[in-house]
Amino acid sequence: MRKVFTLALLLYASTAFAMSSGGSFGNAGLTGTPCSSLVTEAAHTCKVGGGVVYNTEATTGIIPGWVVVLDSPNLPKNGDTLTPLKCRYLAASSSQVLINEPIPFKYGLTIGFTLNGCYSFKGSPTTFLSTDYR
Image 1 (spheres, rainbow, N blue to C red):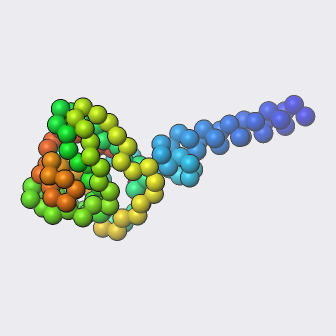
Image 2: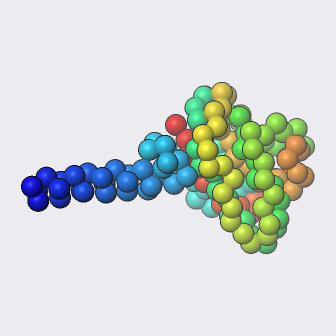
Image 3: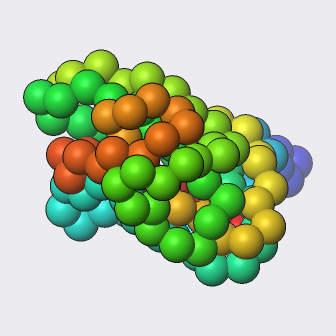
């Protein structure tokens, strides 16, 4: 009886750990492909083609701005008009989770950091960007 209880407890604990270790989409028990900056940058394309983004985080240096998640396979250029899936202000020298729920994208997944607000791109290569997608 004790072996059965121990086995059941181990199965429960490993399931709970697997579900909670996947970042913000751990509640759904999903695993995703991580995509992160290796150096500070203004934008990063993670995937070409459709999928679902589950978790996006950003850490910035001394310059505040807006983090945008784009349904685009291309890096934005300065002056480009944006139609973000999500956009959030990021204060200087801070980190923030931008997405913690599944959001589908059709064309590609690109994350950017802009100084011009949510709808116009003026890149600032001062941010570490990170996301998980499927």
